Length: 409
Image 1: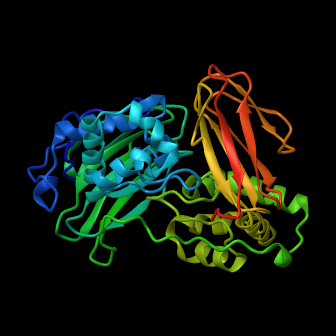
Image 2 (image 1 turned 90 degrees about the horizontal axis):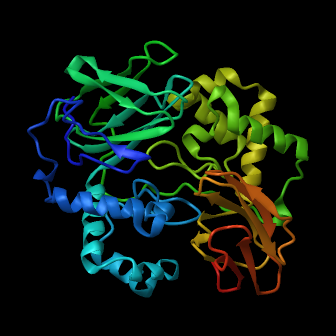
């Protein structure tokens, strides 16, 4: 398995391994195709994307430019012209970056995103000693960015014995991404976890012509339309509570491992599941390889409880914001009158914060350091403006502005 060391350093939390230490260096360049990469410019672009303004582009667009439903869109492959237009005033939440970035900086970020657009993003996580998913399919010759996320409280060591890859380490509660170009010949390649609590754990990368080809575009959304209030089936709170608990913990890994904390999907692992019905869940438990073990874990009643929770989420509009030293990213959102919102506030700082909403009928609450909390809020039927503030942050004047407007989507 030939890993290509295109980037030799990354951010402190999600990093690209220095592959000179862990891999046989491939002679094949990823830039041999349509896109000619400039390593130094890509590295500069990644550093900016990770850190600009203390939050980084990743604060809204994901660590790997894969998008974060509820905040920012998929940015892998986005063009320089689109970035310049967004920062220049096309996207209000990005206007503050005009004072943070030079034109050379923007060009570096565009180079980084263009490079990411050439790579198919593939993710796996290590949880309870297991790879989830434990198998992925890649089209022959496809360059990929493989992310291994270690969610355990101890470092984990990995190797690919069949290809002579030297062991490499993923620190505890951290992630490492590797760039690899699949061979043209079909076959199966493996990365082993050499010290996981569940023995013989491995990630199988199946190179097959039956796998979909990567075209540099975001996956087609599988969102389910919100259910109008008149069609809502009454579900008791106990059923929803059980469903949410199973969503978080089923099989010791939870549905969250692949589908995100709010079933919003995680590009590279699992799809959007908000609003999925019981039939779709049962079909997945039977047919999706990575989910079959859950089919043995969940009872009939528990599947119905998870389905009830997904149906409930499907009736809520997911909105996220990040708080960094009191600054909200994004700091304004628009919603239609009467919309039921699941509002997620992510605290990016190490210390706890207190949040309160002006006129929103949401009781003040605290969010722990590096934590997040969600609240459900129903926008009024009349248009107006509402504010969410951090009352004890380093920067106190910033706020999240929620505009209730008929012009909103």
